Image 1 (cartoon, rainbow, N blue to C red):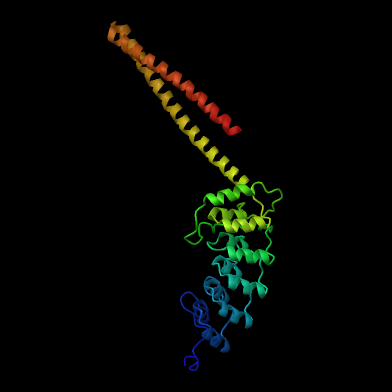
Image 2 (cartoon, one colour; image 1 turned 90 degrees about the horizontal axis):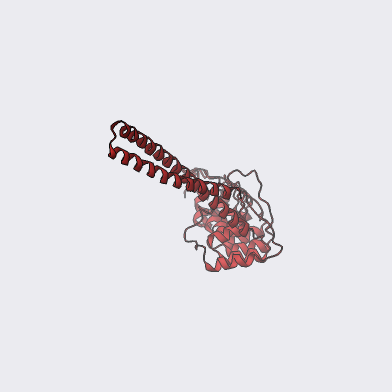
Length: 310
């Protein structure tokens, strides 16, 4: 009825979505078909740069995806972050959609603006093992080097869906076994994290196994060692700062004690008062004890500095 009354098919809501976006997102296949038959824009974009095939893939509506592909939807169209429909499907673990997109020729090695391929997103997703296996079986290049000019690097670990399993005993054992692999391959983003790192960080044994079986280089040992060195250096820096502050306070205390000792010594000399002599001697003894402690602090500072040079 609305179409018969010449409703504007390209009308947008506040998020710049057209009717075909909403129908594709909700999986209303017949509505999508009807809109396409009335010349709805199959490549229209919302504020995020999503096209209808993006939202259909994101939501896992396989029949809508097939319909859009049959009507000529651009399969590797990217959103504002450079994600294709295949990125969307892999990140939300929609294996059937991913399989259909690959069948139609979706680029399995295309990177988004953060430097992630669909393989990377599958390694990070909560239930991404099936998509990961699908990608590996369809030529995903596990050795692809992410372009160094991607400024942001990967931050999607912190943005991963809730419910992911924490790094556990089985994953740790699996990573240990990886260290013994003789000829691993390399695949990293700008931050030095590979899909295997992502799978390990999320605690995903199945995905780790798939990556290992397909030659993923295990740089995890080096990664952990580097992190260990950074933590050690920070601890040394913090300790050194504390020791220097302690030394400064002690030097100030010694100066104050020596000043008090001298003042009481002068009073004792002018008045020949035994009490002043006793107080002067007491201040000098305390100052001497603090000097001994100050020497120990100096040695500790030297030791910390030597450790930092190692």
